[in-house]
Amino acid sequence: MINRIRASIGRRLAAYLSKSIPGYQRFDTVSAEGVASVMRPGDILLVEGDSRISVAIKYLTQSSWSHACLHVGVGGEGDEEAVLLEADLQSGVRLVPIRNYTHLNLRICRPVGLTADDTQRLIAFARSKLGHQYDLKNIIDLVRYLIQRPAVPNRYRRSMLTLGSGDPTRAICSTLIAQAFQRIHYPILPRFGHEGDDGEVPTFYKPHFTHYTPRDFDVSPYFCIIKPSIERGFDYRTLDLTAPRSESDFDR
Image (cartoon, rainbow, N blue to C red; front, side, top):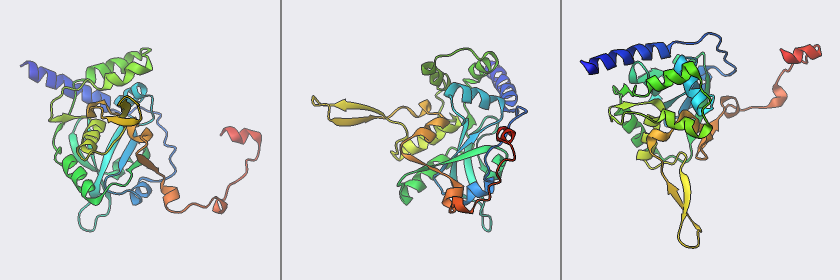
């Protein structure tokens, strides 16, 4: 009975948090199709969400990015649209087309030097999680911080997103992707230390995958930021830039 009540509350909270907030503005000048045209399997797509939970995540992580998806290939025969794997608040781990994010700002993060074999292993592990549910254990905390917006010191904000239940059949978007990369021993944001008396040998300390947020793939030194307009060939001399008619035009 208690579990059913908790599940019912979780579903209602998930529906509430998934609603979009009016006033969102997309600044990206590249279409979702343009983004998809330069993506490769194994790339991560960061999304600046417009939902209530996105506001909470962006606040707690001090980042523009509230959601992360993994590119796992293209559609079926004759369908070249990019297929993304994500952990959705209401639907759980699922596959979605990139057109789902046409109205949002996007960023591509590409792992450097990933081999074909490791790419296959990465995607196979992520696909094995299809059907798993979103980890709703920390939803109440997210709702509380969304409504109250307390002044939380930066060093404590990350911990508020890593409270998960620990249930292996549940995940959130960034932790699922981080777990997949850890399975192939690809670093994201390892902590550094030293061993030995001379302190000259660097040692990598691998944080637990539940400690990662979408922002970490953006600031990671091991992922390239891919700009579609540059990938397709950019020459500033070909741009037709209209000069402002007056100083007031600079503010528009």
